Length: 166
Image 1: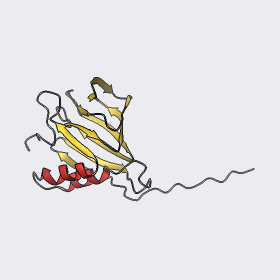
Image 2: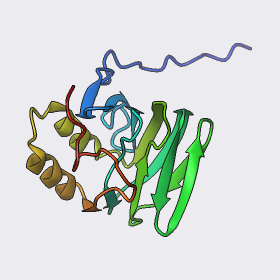
Image 3: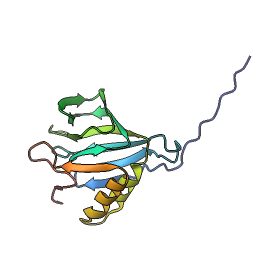
């Protein structure tokens, strides 16, 4: 007996265009919230050495990290971990956290937000011209995320303290 196979829909362009968060940190939306009816969104990030994110918290999303190349230092709550290629980590909603690439090589990772509504904030950040952070931070807060302070690492570039453009 033959079992019919289903053809899974493949999005023609689910956002594979690379966009910049800050100089030295780029992202591409690999699976959009639209494709999953909002259940999750998957974003690929490449971050140069010394790039990271400020300490922040998500009220509505779990954040799952899958490290593909390199490694990140991850602070979540009162714990710190080095998450390397092949490793995964999950930060539960409501947990203050930040990550940074403290190595001398770029890091490449997938970040999966569930549910996937933070994709809106990433799309906004990727469309900003110049230093208009107020719109990005307002969108971030309206999506239930709050920046708590700078990255908890020394000499780190982030959306709050971007790397100078070459």
